[in-house]
Image (cartoon, one colour):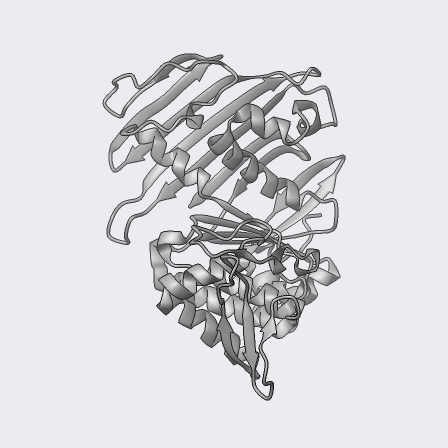
Length: 387
């Protein structure tokens, strides 16, 4: 789980020092910078998978990413997290630091890269680089490899047996979602082959649900039961193969003779099923972190309430193995369904994004305990603002 994130000069994140919990709901107006925080995590994931240069290229280069409020030439990240195998085992703590120098030409180089891992009383420095020079070592101090270029991160390389590869793999497995049924990607037929995760846009949703139905019947049964509880006419969820070796989701409804194909399912039903599939994904196909943009879109408030309840139950069941959640929202209904400690208010002033936790405000907790107002009402009234 990510415990603390410090960022400098990434998009509107001028100077950010943010502590995170198991569940984090980002609330704030448009243009405040909620999605920029999500993109920061996404940048690190893409760097670990495709490389630092590619991560910048996909964002149109360093000049488009660096904070535009000054003449900055340095973007830096510092990430502190922990991984727990079980409740009885002490967590393994990692501290990763990355500082990147760039200019108007778009060329980038790593000024500083540093990775420390702590397990119990033992501390190991696995990466200690400045301008491409330094050491990449095993926990015992043995050299792993020499970095080919200062424009490459050590975490771009998957080295068998290197303890740093575990951190690389952890960041690579963070998942991001902005599911919009109206753009038709969620409604696309997919190949009738097993999937290891639901894609960001959901364009492999039918294949993903087929994977759960055929390979993980217990988890699929939970998805089906939850869906039938909120959609009383729903009787069956199917992922039939076609003659073209593809599949697509269909449902059977009470009172209807013929099934409903994915192209005619309601936006809310489809979005609800997609989010259910993430909540009940088997641990072997799950992710350590899910970043979800505006989960409330297309959903009735009652469905939002159900999703939060199911997520809470699932996280309690999985314990230390439960995923960390970061979500953005504009919905007072969703705000009402979480706790004060899970809220993070996002605001912008002088071009820079600021994050505050309303739980630190005096009197708010007492006000909520008196049940005079809900969190959604407090947010709508402006009482949660950091100002």
